[in-house]
Image (cartoon, chains in turn red, green, purple, blue):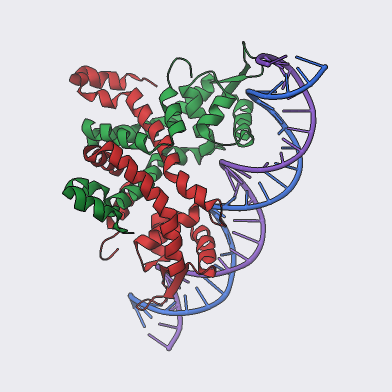
Amino acid sequence: MSDGNVVMEEAQTGDSLHYLSDEQVQQGIEAMFFAYRGFTHDPDRILATMAYGRAHHRAIHFIARSPSTTVNNLLGILGVTKQSLNRVLRTLVQDGLVESRVGENDKRERHLRLTDAGARLERQLSDAQRARVRDAYRNAGPDAVSGFRTVLEAMMEPDLRRKYHAIGEQDP
Amino acid sequence: MSDGNVVMEEAQTGDSLHYLSDEQVQQGIEAMFFAYRGFTHDPDRILATMAYGRAHHRAIHFIARSPSTTVNNLLGILGVTKQSLNRVLRTLVQDGLVESRVGENDKRERHLRLTDAGARLERQLSDAQRARVRDAYRNAGPDAVSGFRTVLEAMMEPDLRRKYHAIGEQDP
DNA sequence: CTTGGAATGTCAACAAAGCTGACATATTAT
DNA sequence: ATAATATGTCAGCTTTGTTGACATTCCAAG
């Protein structure tokens, strides 16, 4: 819990690295845990009333964000196996929420987009989540939001950070 | 995606609420998703080599943080059913990583604490996670860290925010 | 034009970790 | 005495992840 590491740093630099103490780091870890629970709470509550789960929400979210994305691209973003994603996508396509089009250039690829019904569900699912994040932003203020995003970015795995930045760009 | 809501706010207050735009909120949602993946990446990698999973890590983490906590308290923190937690605790006690003592005042309660072996595993599991968070903190700087924690707190469900603050205090 | 590899889909089997419901056992509180 | 609390346990189910194997389709390299 308290190896001499941080103590040495503090001895070297005084109190300026207080935010790097084990206790501060530990509290940050716990804050991530509890905040993520809040983060998923609202969509989970809605999904519990349907035949869908969090995996469906994730797929719907990123299809909405990157229309015409391919299955392979989605696999890279979500970090699950194709079998796992395919089970989710199959139900969404069957239920008419997602459309799977054969690629024009490369006909092996399937390009995914939400149908109108899918977009409606996406809206419903994400509205509560957006509201929560927006409220948190409003309460915290712009400087805190900036720091929030800076730390989150620094916490990502490098390849996921690249994917994070690629979302919403021209050619992902 | 862009209901007129935010546009109205921006019309009212100018650009000061830019950080509340749907696009900013959406990016924050995705940052949470990707960052949480990084957050769990290191312990998950270690756990994959053992017979334990993320649920064991969570139990071990909070037992380490709140020694002598009761099962009921842990249930409230983790937000799972007693059956689910019990399955995890049973293996940890059987494997000699967690000790379960009958309460002194109230003998219905079981007070949980890590054994030496459990503390060693906790250290191993959490070291990588702490290192990642500490590196993220270091790269982001103290102001960003402050904002990070402010937004995370604002994102929590109120009852979990209370539990978050109660951890590490005298009488949880 | 054949062939290797890539992208996708699908089947089967399995595991982790959540859930509900029911029930048992101590122990404490009323 | 009786009710409520804290815990443990059994059985069964669901979601979501995993591997492994195999088929199809198609692009690209030879």
